[in-house]
Length: 367
Image 1 (spheres, helix red, strand yellow):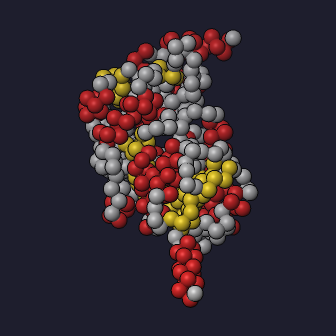
Image 2: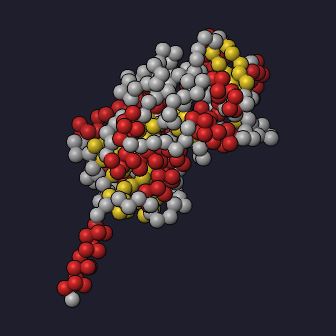
Image 3: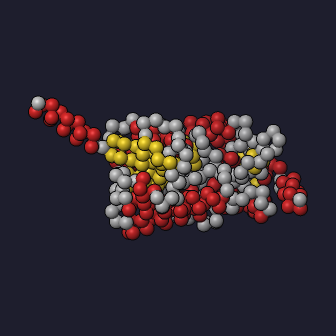
């Protein structure tokens, strides 16, 4: 009888061990991959999946809620670590709504986590906050200054998120915050200003500028987030495939040729398209496809993490995902020329010139 009671106590103690981890955006590309990985991890006792809609990951506890909902605190009771992947980097949807959800959602998660007694919050941002510039060192150190301009677009969201995360430990000293900054994302579910660049028939380059292409597959982001969760890595933490590709390598791998323009012409054309409403993204986002912003993920690799995807493999995954899609002047067109949301002020500004697009935009405005 005593042996049986001891066995029961041992089973209960075993069930109480391990982390309880909540993943926001668990139905999205990165969140889905992460939640699935965590269910297979022996050190994780329970995975709580949070999103506006119920996803298809098995073995998790689904709690359907918007990340901006103040009631989030009630969903985080008993959670040890929150991984906030619900920061939207895609170009689909309304930009103002995206900005609201990105900034307010992060603020809500940080506040709710502190109120619920969560020990650590891991927030997924982007290495775009370093800025893309001709004089950037290659690679950028993780502690490099954040030089991206606050331009009212996605990058402004990311900079505000960085500020929120920097202030959070002072406001809530019991909760540690780690910011994760992936390089240009590739893989299923990614539709960003950078992936749209590769939907054009030719790639824009700026005369006298040398880009350094670096990518990060969503599987590697999920792997890195799992590693950070288990090893409590302090940030900021960059995530990227090792090294970078030069323009010639990218053209050889993608089969895309280039169009070379002066910087003044490219920025001027992109600015005109933005003012006409053809593309809502700020002109500064053109820098991310023409200037270097490669990063070195030293904190992760020094701790023992290794990415699965090389830059070549990550780029191959990107090209597979954009196969059959066509973006002209950053607009995606289908068979009936139905434009989806807008990407970066893209390479086809150079290929087609702005005349046709400008005329169409003016006709729409008159109509």
